[in-house]
Length: 203
Image (cartoon, rainbow, N blue to C red):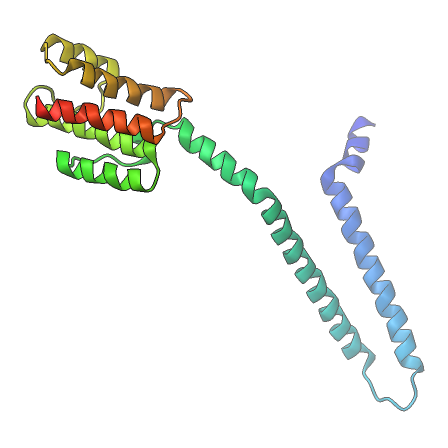
């Protein structure tokens, strides 16, 4: 009993019922039109051809209406879709959003400047972070390994007793917070990271 009620109340069943009623309504309209055309005198028209033409016109109107409704629905939902995509992008670790390949320190800095001009401060800071890791590798202090966490880098750098350790700490902590928290990146944060990176380079 419950199965029968469910089948008669399901979305598929209602859709089938609606489609059947629309089809019956079309057929009824066509039969009325055929009856009217058969009563016309002086016109040599093929009723079957008229049926086909009217059916084509009706389906064309239906298709155009569906396209228009779909477009209106998309316009209505587009802001929500974009917000959802932005939230999904921000919830991912930065390293997952862009494929990281080995670049020189200068190349990472150029990318950081590019993202900064585009006001994408998260990626601009990420590029500074990568430039810092590449600088560590170039100096032979630490190898740039994707398997290492920011805290592991921090512990290893601390062992070398580098004078610019606070600057390394800021970049590593900022990167970790941007990856794994809801912290927003803005221009002032990027500028602070940029200044600390210059301290790293100059030491």
